[in-house]
Length: 312
Ligand code: BDR
Ligand code: CA
Image 1 (cartoon, rainbow, N blue to C red):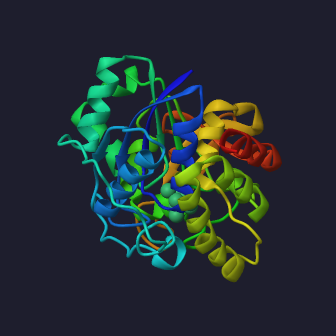
Image 2 (image 1 turned 60 degrees about the vertical axis):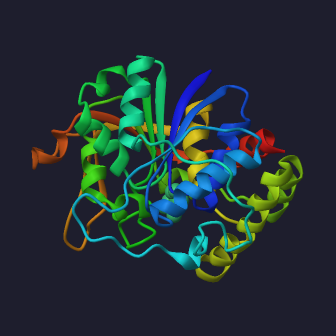
């Protein structure tokens, strides 16, 4: 069983991943921490509250980063996730409220309360994890695992030719988090682009998820319009669900161990560079950061099957 904090910017694919975290019998969802990214952070918080309420659960929600650590915020991509983050469908009213505690403090307190038992799964820009590290650097020794959806090793980017969105939106935070020296796996586009969730898959999911299913299916329609127009794909990539799939079913992924760096400025800002462990480079700078694991590929069909089986 995995006890997790899910750090998120919901977001259509975030919403689906949240549904998985709420539904999976072997996941204990300790809290949702929110960040800007697909939407402004206030909207992310409202969506996080709403999604857990629609599943008849009241998961603690702690609001976090509103802007990147250093760079100027890039506008939220309303044409991908909708201005409300959930495909601009009409949404029910939110009943509950977020905690007074900040996302970063919530992360530190939760890890303190249960040392070596809590995993962090982060699927948005990484400001909250960076802030938690700043509040208490010793969490690196007491977290169980960190799984980050973001980056790209060989696949190329989705915001620029080399940068994936979560890295691009806050490269300085990403750099701190990916080099903090904790047990971390990066699940990037090399894995998530192997997965396509078809309209038929979505139909099966919607049927199994009641009121939450209506929001998942409605927002999926909007999100897949973007995939059809921009990428010529019938369906969409369930990026953020892949981070949970990795946590629960690592055998569906191929990984490598090595050193990660994030480019923080210039034309390649947000690019992730990976130097494999056993491969020396003439310029040694890229091999100095602490070792982490990265996903280089995945069994896309197997992952989509796992998502559908969890939610149907
Ligand atoms: C990531 O960017 C966001 O748009 C998605 O929610 C996902 O976390 C994919 O690059
Ligand atoms: Ca996300």
